[in-house]
Length: 93
Image (cartoon, rainbow, N blue to C red; front, side, top):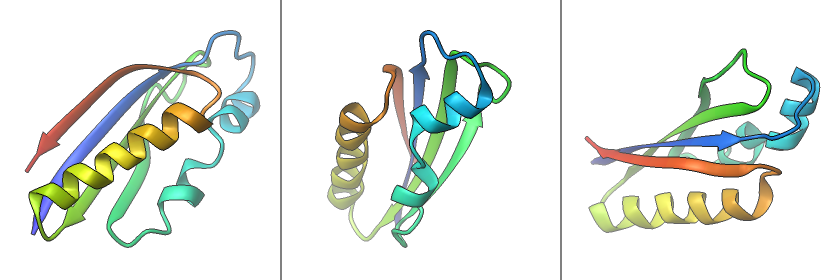
């Protein structure tokens, strides 16, 4: 089994409340948590309004599949989150 941890930090300029922050992040649990190969959680910046950090644990049978899933997650987040990606890190376990 191949495992990667993908951590993405977002900037949410102008975010004025935790409710707005949740709306702008657009239900990442619902979108990615349904896939059996992905576990997702908000892993940092929980108390900050203008930033957010999310971690995704990806499991697959090959390193290429893990990389492919991580790339799909990054691409989808770039298109759907009402914010700016500041940093992306991948750790293969």
